[in-house]
Each structure stands twice: as C-alpha cells, then as structure tokens.
Picture 1 (cartoon, rainbow, N blue to C red):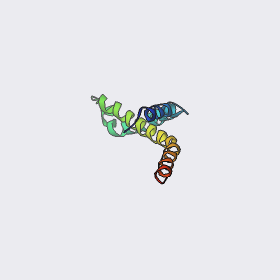
Picture 2 (cartoon, one colour; picture 1 turned 120 degrees about the vertical axis):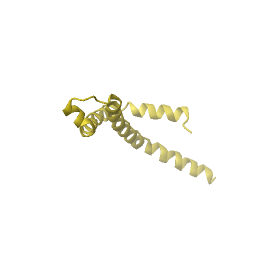
Picture 3 (spheres, rainbow, N blue to C red; picture 1 turned 90 degrees about the horizontal axis):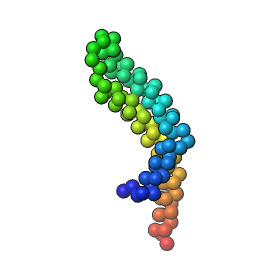
Picture 4 (cartoon, helix red, strand yellow; picture 1 turned 120 degrees about the horizontal axis):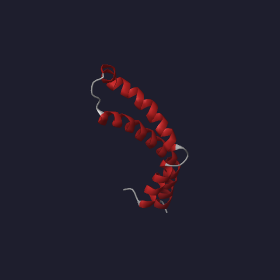
Length: 91
C-alpha cells in the first residue's frame, strides 16, 4: 500500500530533475514514430484517424519514461527502507 508520504515522494520525483520534460520529449519522438507506423495508411490515404489511438500512442511512452525515471530516483530510498526494516527485525 502506498502511504501519503510515499505518494508525495513519488509526486515530487515526477516533477523534479527534468523528468517531465524528458518524458515529454521521449513521448513526442516515440509517439510520432508509432503513430506513423500505426496510422500511416490513414494519413496517406486521407481517411479518418482514430484520435483515441493517437492520444494513447503519446501517453504510453510518456508514462513508461516517467515510471522508469521515478523508479530509478526511488531505488536509494527503497534500499534504505529495506535495510532499516532488516536491521530492526534482528534486534
């Protein structure tokens, strides 16, 4: 379960250190490439475009990039928490 303190730590990591900007740039590049692959025929043939898929194709890389960056920032604190719990368990 995620406590309020842990949630606030995750939230602050999400918007610190350029994570949001970097995730946006990755989503822009990867999302554009994926959209060209997935909906290239609709773009070239001037047929209807599925806008839900377009938005989702940009949101998924953004989420994955953000998750990776935040989880890497949280690793030191998770290791410290695990060590602290282990040390208190053996007392």
